[in-house]
Length: 370
Image 1 (tube, rainbow, N blue to C red):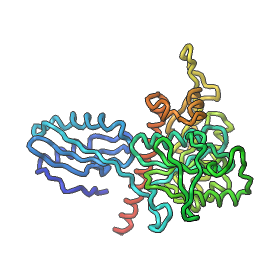
Image 2: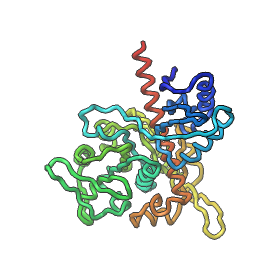
Image 3: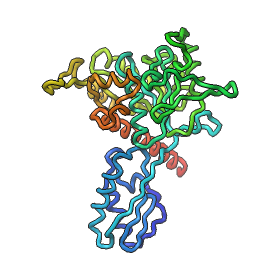
Image 4: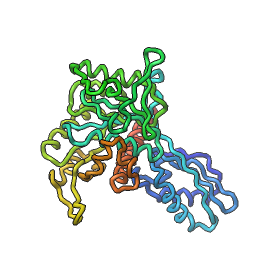
């Protein structure tokens, strides 16, 4: 595969030396050098100061400074360069959509699913959305669990009610820096959505299409558990970029997670990886790590389907309490180890989507050449 480079303002042979060093810097999530990954947008030399422009296709702003320091150190071996001035941009590649689509302002849509209820799927969806936002992305979340909406409580916006100025579209809530929509915003107190499957699926599509979404890099959809009408309707009517499957180490949860993975495979939605919740518990008194629900289940199912294990989350009281209070761990304690795991999951998910998009573009390019 040939890589088209920008018009760099550095003379040979220094240009070749700089490009070689940049491509030896392997991005840990894209598994490519900066040149091969098409991340280098600008190279210019002002005296002995190298002006470098980079664009990341996935959110990772918390590690920008560390990466610039690494690049500066690597380029310092060249006598012609005394200083590196690096500008970093972030641009999410857009998933192909029709220009007249109601979702045209959303670049990527991520489904978070589980085969079984009670495995922490909604907790994962909320903290994944917040982690993507903390890494620099514009993010929205859609609560597609029509029968058991929990996003309003988890985000602390239970009193929000959508407004409609034209009788067709409706506003969404804003919480902790992300946009949110849920059927729960339209239900009063303990009111239940007593609908058959097709009605619930129709309500989901209405929520997706009629919401006044702002420009978003990612829309995270928190699906209900199972593999029924809502999941199938979503795959047919909504341009989902990829899916994350959530499980616990229990055999019964793993069995249902396998069904979720095969469902996405059948409808041609890429599964980006597996998140294992309740993986272990660390005793607050002695620090002993225990596995109350079994061990290595998530890694085994990921290996069986040739998928990455995106992260293993501990069974932790503060994680549950933060969700009940409407201040998720990414907000309540962003410097905690658990928040760090969610940021790692977010970077992996974003990088996987960027890689899939790039592979699709290369495939189209090859077909055009033929």
